[in-house]
Image (cartoon, rainbow, N blue to C red; front, side, top):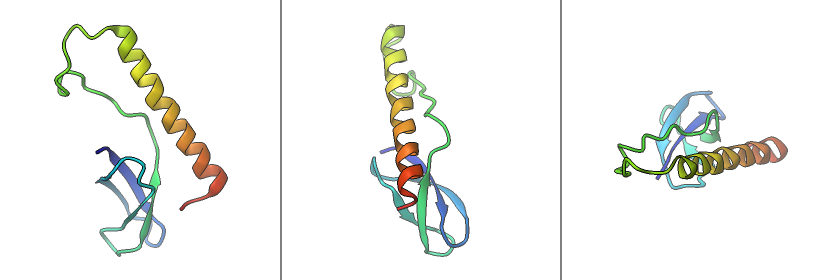
Length: 85
């Protein structure tokens, strides 16, 4: 499950939450209001901490990071065109 950043629609409180992939909204821990997901940056992946082998090819790493950046950009476009959930 990934960490997502959320901003509350009521109190503007920003918080990070571990939720299921694709979650668009979450309850605010401050006021209980509905929070929307905010995408600020692509994830920084620590391959060693994930237990990856030291000999993972640079091409694999580049492709993995590219896919995640594309997904973040796609989600940003959807939020911009549809507004918050």
